[in-house]
Length: 261
Length: 261
Image (cartoon, rainbow over all chains, first blue to last red; front, top):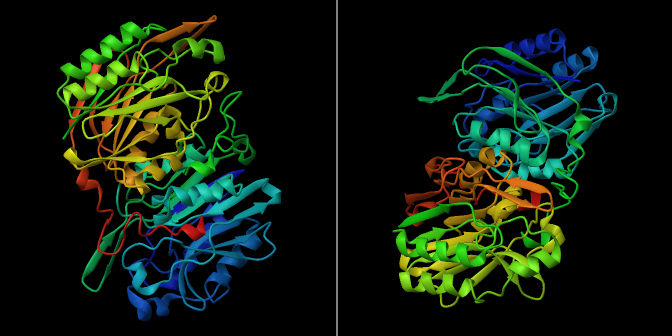
């Protein structure tokens, strides 16, 4: 199967423009799973509940419904970050398209910095979606979730073959750690990071691209620059992640001694 | 404080020779904490209970007592791998010397490959030792324990500032992951790996050195080659690891959402 990550700089606060672009990419890119960045419909630097309210919508709202429809029409699976209005506001990613009876949402567990002013920590936990036509078990984490080895571990222990990680990453330490998230769990990892800079309330926040798809041994299958728009594509074989044996005796999951942690 | 790791190739099965060398290094090296490799007194490739019985001794046995005495006489803290005879055989590390009321032992939690034929998985769990004169909280894991993010995590959550990791590493993936163990927990990490090759029962196993001391941001403070004897030394400030805040809002430990994993 082919997995793709889309790297771009969303227009700040312009959901119509960003959604049009996302829908176009869904139709254009030849891949089975397409991952877009965190908050791809809105841009990032919306601070506090009033600003988040202006960009948030329910799953199936006016913009996310277009993305879901495009995914279904194109016969692809899409993971795309958006600001979700539910009982409260969540920094979420929709999972929709072929093989999914209905769209799903993952709500970011670990919120970074000023996200905490406008969003609530996610209540979905980490879960895995089976995609029968791809023989793929897909899990999602978002951006700062990477900082906690527990995130990818929880997904892998629930059977994820592929972790999609919509991101708006700003520091550089993630590039050291992301391949290890793949390696330590023997899973594929698709990090769709954005580029560009958001300006708001006298503040600038820049994002460092370098979108990458990692194999389950931590190697880079495909990646992008720090600044340019890019579509990063890799062929993966999800079932190859499932045998966690590393020799005739040892098994990455079987060797865990849960009572010792 | 100064932490040192000693890299060498133990003489296979010759506890007298290896212990003499270890004792000499304890007196010679100017450091507060000195870490030796896994199974440093015996070498590695002792397969099955009969072979392990020949090299194993209780903590405080004829060879480990010399190491403990040297550590105490030299006024240093020593972490050194040895084959321990207790109720059963453990792949252990002693922790002894200045600041310790009595020597302690960590028993390797995750056993690798043919170690399982001669050793039993450790029953000590991961624990941290406070060294008052160094204002340092020291934790120990051994070699393959690195493969499980839970190991270093457990130590860091128990307050480790510095993790000593006596090792006999043979693959290369550890070099990708070790700095991330330091980074993700904001702890110092001292990996004392051996060099050389053990030959036994028609089998050769080679070890890849590259002993390294990592800072809490994952950077290499000091390291060694893959093949040569070496003493690797770094100055560290244990207390610098304790503030896990990464900005005004986020905290590496405070942000963990244990119910979500």
